[in-house]
Image 1 (tube, rainbow, N blue to C red):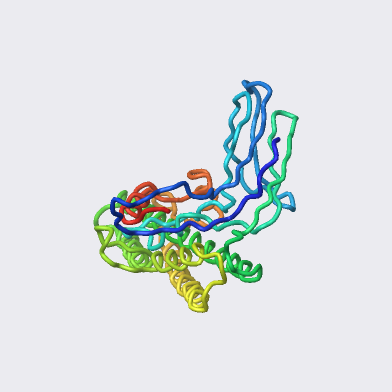
Image 2: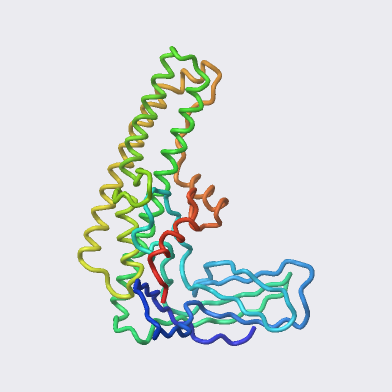
Length: 317
């Protein structure tokens, strides 16, 4: 392992402006920690990996590696993985909602492993020295942004669970006769789910309808806190608390009517030799999301589409 420079956590800055002929563009500072290691020869066989651990030995992130002979350099974002985010028909209200929060300052350990051999190095992560925020303010920011991060992932779960249950109900209804009373029960469940989905995320076609639902509100607060290194505002903290309460209410209603509908429909489905309805729980959802996206975005309208719309209007500086 080669020594790593102290890694500085610098916030992204976004601008929208029109430049004239006098515009000058230079290199910006790095937003990732650089990890370097030297290989005497190319690693052709065997398990070869690199990972970052915190001071307590907890795995933070597995890194992509190069097996080439000589000096190899790997970048580490110093951030948590991007939150699993629900799809919607509005672009992200804040570009910073695309990224995971910066991890706390401190010393992290990098381990590069080949078979039974392991090489380690330390990375010292510090706050941007140009910033004027105190350590206490930065701690408040991290606490709030992680709270908002988990709220984003919770609404993603509710959205996916509602969609999954609606799809199950549609599948079972399609196997029943048009006059079967159970078909009406399943359609009623789908209607209730549809009403819930409209509260959870913007659903009007077009992407710029101005529709604001829970997804958009939560992402705006998360992005606002995530894009600022200092203490969150009182307004942001109050919004976060209110959004927790609002989402808990919608989620509680969804689970309540879903469980009642399943209690009524499942015995009849069983009699007809059809699969019963099952509500996806959050643990199962998280496991599936990790398998699909490796812990990143759980998007159907994928991240690339969202990013392309965001960066039509923004220049990253």
